[in-house]
Image (cartoon, one colour):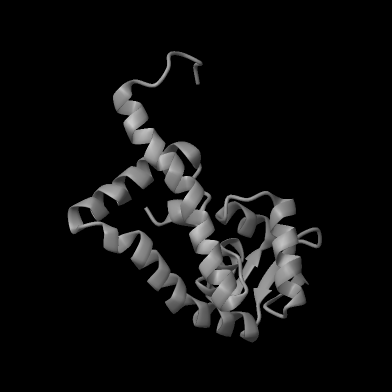
Length: 161
């Protein structure tokens, strides 16, 4: 990565709205989930990964990688979710040094309950703003950027390519 020239006018016209979106969209996602389900978007994302995984069990380090977070951030989120009864930690059966995170029935109910509101929010602020061609372009653009940000394909969204 070189520290070269300034943005061209065309680059600035593309970057400025994206930078604004990166500020505003996470706030919108958090606000709706906190208001309706007392979950942050990160909490919801964590529960969703567990809900979509066979047996609803994921190694803590894998869960951190799939959410592209650090292990300490994931551990903090799991502690928060554990206090609410949504997940529990278990010693990994195949590695005494590792911890598995298990989605509880309460956590599964919570993520299922939160999903319709989250989907409606994403539709309102993102998907419904785009026509079919733009939606395909958004997918392609997001995948191109993810390929650079997550070249090893560890994050859940990158795995879905």
